[in-house]
Image 1 (cartoon, one colour):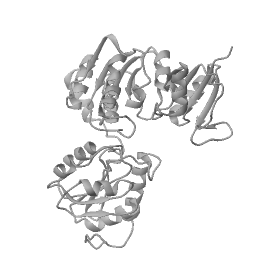
Image 2 (cartoon, helix red, strand yellow):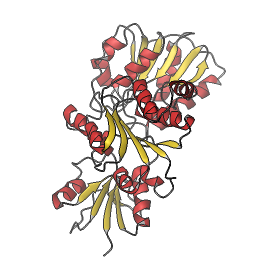
Image 3 (tube, rainbow, N blue to C red):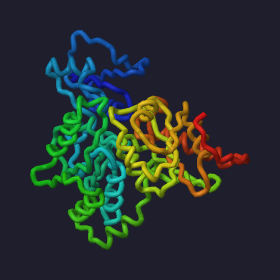
Image 4 (cartoon, one colour):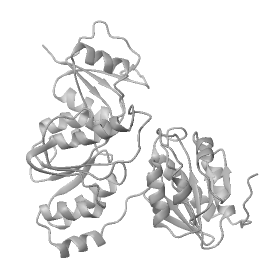
Length: 384
């Protein structure tokens, strides 16, 4: 009898699962918030619930009615990445953490490539692992970015190396509390082979890269050369352009308060900071200290603007606006020559944008338009 599989969520991860399962000859039923001719609404009630397997996309909580029903019926629930682990025999490195995952896996892959290995960064960075099944060379090393959402449904021990970079408050609108979030992160330890290596010292991310490079026999001189040639990822403290003497940076990937503090620390003082979006259950009070002496003006937009304004107590002006376009306009008005305009939201993008990439691209487009606008800005800053 043909195996029946329910896929919950038809995003990037879900689509990769659908293609894989259909190639395997399974009967696939798909539900999603955005239904279509071939995709059912995710509120569909199945009676009887006669599926052999349920595949959930990252971010689908256990409280979802169909997820709950599967658990109650004893039906196995997995994610796309778990299905891939069961298929692949490549050497794999798994990286998780609250901040810095994408950059770290990209650096590791780059250093391995410079060291003569075939390697690629995949997973939560934007390339579903399952989409590579059947296309990889056996010698390729896979550097996996793994989120807490993905770890919830992973079980197979396939990692040669696993590492937790850091754990700070994040996704607390999804996890029940900080302990639940921490528990999810530590599931990566159970994915490492018995003879593999697991790092959880919460060291500087460069220390992990050092350790992993050494594991693969890459000498210090080559490591330093490879590191120097690495080009940063977009939307991570990315220099965009200069507008009338104002240096503009895009850090749209910063979706936690800690990531914003890191960006502020990296830049010189006189920062005009644009922040806000959909809160992931975090608090912003730590910004009071980390912004002191660095942030010249704080501009807030999005669903969390009022919460941030209440929690952050700084001497600098705090402006509340209604859109990213208005935030950029105000930011350039407030800035003087030599200042830094920084988009580093500290929040998810889903209140106004499809994802952090779309938010970052919109910001860069606005700057591009302003850069080529012939009018001059009156450099002033007022909360009206």
